[in-house]
Length: 184
Image (cartoon, rainbow, N blue to C red; front, side, top):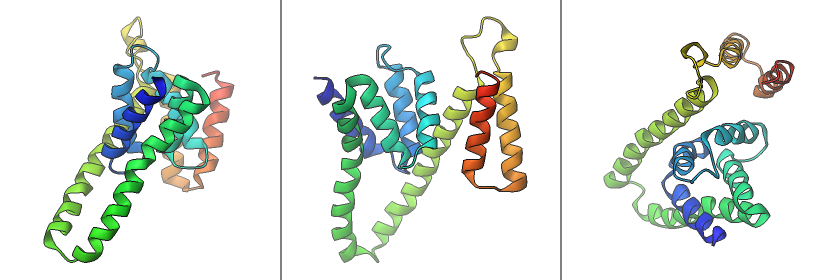
C-alpha cells in the first residue's frame, strides 16, 4: 500500500511540477504538511541540501530520498520512476504532435503560458528553501526566529558567488565545512 501511495503521489508531482527539480519543492512541502508526521519541512530542507550536493537531477534525488525514507529501497525506486514517468510520457506525445504543429500560434501560446508558471514554481521553491534554512518558527523567543549562523553563512556565500563567480562545488564544500565547524 505504501508503494501505491508513493506511485500516485509522485506521479502527480511529476505531472504538475513544470520547470524542473526545484519545482517539486512546493509539492513536497504540501506533502510534508499532509503526511501525518512521517515527513517534515525540516527533513525536506536536509534532503534538498543532500540532493543539491549529489550528481543527478534534483527532483529525482529528492523523490528517491523521500521514497527511501517512507518505504525503503523499493520506495526509492517507485518514487523516482513515478516522478519521471509523466515527463517521459509527455515528451513522447508532445514530440509527435509538435512535429506537425510546430509553427502553430496555439502551440506557441501554450509555451508562452508555461514559462511564467515555471518561473512561479521555481520562485516558490527558492523562497521556501530560504525560509526553511533561515527562519525558525518554533523558536521560544522572538530574537531566535532568525537562524543567525545560517543567515551569516547565506550572506557570505551569496557575496562570494556574486564577487568571485567560482565553480559551485567550491561553495558547497565551503558551506559544508563551515557547517561542520559551527556544528549546525
